[in-house]
Amino acid sequence: MKKYFLDELAKYAEKKNPLNNVKLLGGNFYFTNNERLIHHICTANRSNYASGIGTEVSGEFNLGGMLNADQEFTDLLDKVITPAFKSVNLNDCFDIIVEETEHITKEWITEGRRESVINAELEFQRLALRTTVELFVSPQLEINVDPVLDALSDIMEVSDFTKHASNKRKRALSRLLPFITHADPRFEAAVEFVNALSNQLAEEYLRKNVDRGILFDKLFSLYSDDNTEYLIVISIIKRFLLVGFLPVAEALTWLFYSIDTTPGLRKKLEDEIELETEGKELTAVNVKKLKLLHSSILESLRMYPPIAVFQKSVTYRDEFEGTNIPQNSHILISPFILQRTSSVWKDANTFNPERFLDGKTPERGFIPFGDEVINTAAQELTIFEMQVVSALLLRKTRIYYQSKSAPVFKATPILSPVNRVLALAVKKANFESTDIESQENQ
Image (tube, rainbow, N blue to C red; front, side, top):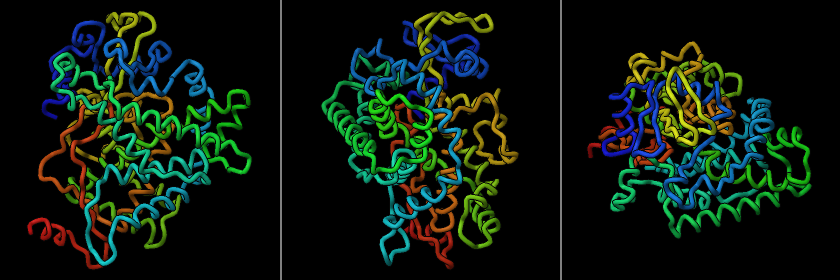
C-alpha cells in the first residue's frame, strides 16, 4: 500500500485517538476508524449522513454527479428497492448464475491447452455484469458487456489519483480523497455512452414483450407510479451498469487470491465441495451447506472489502460521545482499515476463515460493501452468487496468483490492485499443483 491513500489513512488511524475525527487537509474533511462512531453514522443516525462526493473540493464533474442521487431516488431506495432485494428468493437465482458462469468460462481455456492466463478483474466483471442484467433487468435483453467495461475502465482510470501525481494542486488529495474525478474527454465520452445505453435498455425493457428480471419484477410489483416508471428504470439501469456489479467482481477476485495464498485452503474447499455434492451436480441446496467456503468468502470480504473507502456528508450538526461533528462536514470511512483494526478483530491481519465458521457476521465493524442501500440490501445475494461461482470454478479449474509480490492498491474507492493478472489451469483427474509450479519456474 506504499504511497497510496489507504496507507495514508492507516497512519492516521494508528496515531490518532479514533474517538476524535482527524482533520484532513484543513477545511471540513475528517477521517474516523472508530467502529462505534461508524455504527452511529451508518446505522443509528443514518438519516443525518448523506453519501458525499467531494464536489466542494473539486468543483468538477464527477461520478457521483452522473448517478443523480436526488432525494426522490434515495427515498425509492429505502422504501422500494431494499424490500425488493429482501423479497428475492435466492433459489430462483441459482440457474441463471450457473448458466452465466458456464458461458463465460468456456472462453477461458483454449482447446488442447492445460493452462492459460486471464485478467481476473476483467473476466469476473464480464461474468458479474452479464449475471446482473439477466437477474435484475431482463433475461431477454442482449448486451455486449465489453463496451460497458471499456467505459467503466476509462471512468475508473480518470478517477485514480495515482494518475495525477504531477498535478501539484491536487497532489495532497491524491492519497486521501479518491472521490474527485478530473475533467477528461475520455470520462465525458464514457458518461455519454453509459447514458445512451441506459436509455436504450430502458426502452427495450419497457416494451410489453420483454420479460422482467427477478428484481425488476419484485420492484414494480411494489412501485406503481406509471408517470415516473421510465425515469426510475433508467436510473436503476445506470447504477447497475456503473457500480451494481462491481462488488461481486472485485470480491470474487480477492476470494481466489485469498484461496491461493492461504496454504492448504484450496484442498479443504475442494474436499468440502465433493463431500456435500457427492460428486454430482451443484444445487442451490448443497451450495448453502458449504460452510468452509461461506466462511472463506466472509473472511475474504473482511480483509479485502470491495469498497475500500467511502464518504458521508453531515446534514445537521451532530455529537457522539463528546465529539462534535460539524454541519456540512465530510467524513471518510474505510472498511479496509476498519476491518483490519486490532481493537475490533483478533489477529486482524491474518486470513482465518474459522472466525466465521458459525455463519454469523458481527453487527459492527463489518461493512465490506460500504453502507449504500443498493449494495447492503444485495449483500446476501452477492455472497450467494460468490458461493455458486466459486464452487463451480473450484471443481473445474485452479486460479492462482501469478505475481511474486503482494498486490499494490490503486487510489480509487474500489479496492483494486494495480496488476491483477492470474493464471488459470484446467482441472483434470491427473492435475497436480506441481504442474503449475514447474511451468512457473521454466
